[in-house]
Length: 427
Image (cartoon, rainbow, N blue to C red):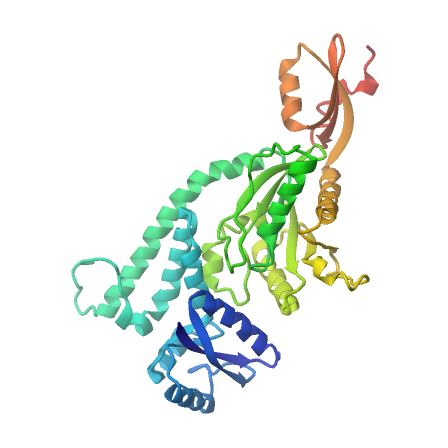
């Protein structure tokens, strides 16, 4: 296993070790083991070398005594900082952004995710190519004639810029094919609910628990397998999974989105913005948080901060779902809340919590529905078809000349159906 020294500037927040613990988990995902860590208390990193000269000397001495493969910085280094510190140490110098990008690269399986992470990697590498230049592999043969006075470094920079453009064009083609599906969902009048939260907080497991519960109480075990892959791994989900579900005759769309992380690289947030559109376009956002994680407060802050970037001026309703409450059964009065938002203690292991969550979802959905009775003549087949595709049917009763429907009707359609309301018709 490769080894590393972790480095962090504690900017008077006293959370350096929590952040380094998370960084240790991230590099472990890549097969790298933390050997030592260096923390410097400072209001801001050194503009040239991230650490001050004293800490640089200390780190150099540590590397001399016990050589390592990597020195990993907990913040994203500027291109100048990375070049300068790389010149000082024998070990390879990488930063948190590089680590996160590499994990994403290994996790990406769909064409869309692979293109998004490739673009993010290229944008990260372009201003830092001077540092990585000796080990840079373009994975291609000749790339054209060398221009007058053009160095190999300049050639590689031009190559990367062209790669970014080419992959962005490929991504546009993939997204244009996906756009039809997205527009179809938007035109369906179904509300969209997005599960968001910190990576590995339990979003996919929550979606699967709701699917299993609904399969019992709504679908009578006839629900086609719609579960999503859920493992105890960082960034297991890099694409958005959307499922059309029904609870108590009310249909809705439930999506499982990509997980958030502290200090997410700007290149990554930019490249994955289309994937994150599911959260931006959601009518209701459910933030899943892991109660057992000692870094819960930091994770909530990161999630809220990332959501603010994604949502902009949009203000959907948000519910905070505090997961793994079953591990706190010995504390009966424990409370979880985020000021200004609805919150719910929750466990995927107990069906009473799936019921509570679905009731909250139903309460939200019914804000835009009205229960009405409609008498629809048999001969009006077009109307019957439209009714059955735009409303949620509670019951149908057949009479000689008409069908009596009891439906959850979107309020946007109640005026159109008003002449057929049973209370207004004389039969």
